[in-house]
Amino acid sequence: MVRVEEELKHQRELMRQGFEQMDKRFDEMIRRHDCHFLWLIAFITTVGGLVVAAGKLW
Image (tube, rainbow, N blue to C red; front, side, top):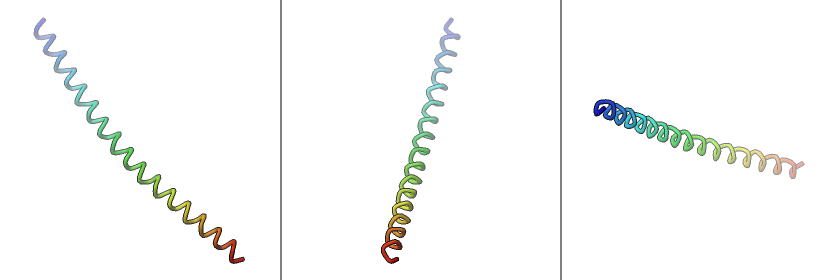
C-alpha cells in the first residue's frame, strides 16, 4: 500500500508540474496576442486617420 501511495503522490506531482508549464505557455501566448492586438488597433487607427485626411483634401 505504501508503494501505491508513493506512486500516486509522484503522479500528482508530475501532473502539477505539467499544469504549471501549461499556465506559463498560456501566459506567454496571451502576452503575444495582446501585443498583436495593440499593433492592429494602431494600424487601423492610422489608416482611418489617413482616409479621413484624404477625404478632407478632396
